[in-house]
Length: 324
Image 1 (cartoon, rainbow, N blue to C red):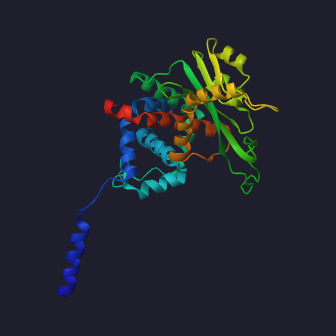
Image 2: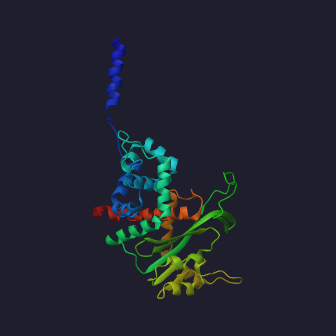
């Protein structure tokens, strides 16, 4: 009996407190993003469309749902994956504002309906605009130079699903010697401050140059792009009358290489390469390298919201000290 009592006291002592601990990288990331996200702005966008408390089931708090939605984008979580993560991770519950002692975490259906609400009212693009307005108040303004580029995001090519077919809004394209199936994310990025100000979504088969006009805000003085945008001088002048075409040119011909054009392309690429940072954040840090939803509209909403968060992540060091 004495040995048993001794064991019980020892076990209680071991579980009553934790002597050692440190913040994980996930917690550090969430703390930083909590500082830089201007919560009032996206909340004000969603609030007019969010269900109000009435005779039915009381809706989950709007801020909880918005925070959960942002966590989905940062960690590339599905709707059921988000529900599981809230029960599994104390740091995510703390960030989202879920207290399991008083209420359950939002279930996957609630999370799905919130996502559909954002898609229905095109709030992804509105979030991008609001974030950019916020950045402008902090001195990070969109100027008169735009870099345009596009990246392919893969979609499942399998037909082993309920409909027995691939997503009809996705298409395949060939890049180099390899075929890809999915969509293209087209973006316009400010060349000086590094802010994504325009996002277009198309099937992967659509040429980069077809979305060029929609990626310009009209006040440009210079427009940079890779060789996929060459020969679009008239389109640039129509969308931005005062813009200079700084897109790269073809350098290799049948019988010679244009060395002068090659040198100019190298100079232009020093500016144009900035756009790759945003695709790296989207794909490598946020994990958005494969589509999760069927259809372009759903994925466009997600892309716009993601690039709003990419802008905040890109400038997190400048925003955090300002007491956002």
